[in-house]
Length: 263
Image 1 (cartoon, rainbow, N blue to C red):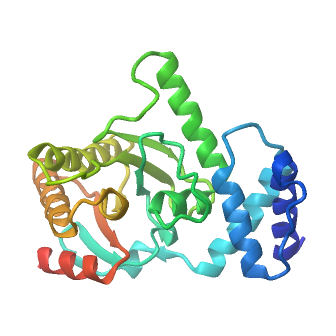
Image 2: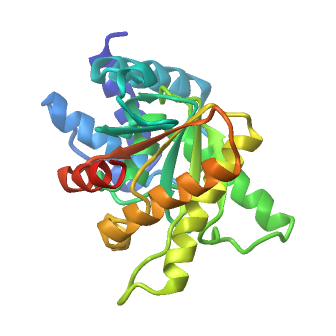
């Protein structure tokens, strides 16, 4: 199968699952088909799928990953001992773990082609990631450890599937509705510390953080970066190890903020 054939197969399979979409017209243009596939993956509920679909999906996403290019830790400049700064697409990073700024449902973003990092990570990983997240949440709920929603400031770990990293750490940051409170700041710090503690528990050697709670969750970028860098520095001081931390940013403004804060 060529990539184009895989793409068409996946689209047709996902459309066939949904009676409301069975008369949907599939566009001819490749980029339009890619957006359609991502949209169909985004809206798909966590439910059983055939092995053939997963095999072809994985082949397709591995091809897309190779086309985007993979960034290893050796490609990223060290800004100070144990800390790196990199601007770009976090789904390209070949590190032990990347951090996903998840929502409280913990199943990924269901908005087709939404610009959030949760959507980007799930789209690049494949539908297996949503299936694993669903199993984790169902298990937690059945054991009555928590409600169906993930608490803010905690972290969970999953496989990475078709991403170049080994694991994904999922954390829910605080949502800002007005003025930033002390509790908001504490919860955001908890996100970073929870991820670091979970990474240490799994003996991971490198972890890449996105800008948790900024963007859709409206935490001011400067204040969020100050909390992120200080929490990581404090953790590294309290827990000396060889774990490398990468601050991954996407926007130019965030790059300038982190560059200044990290000296």
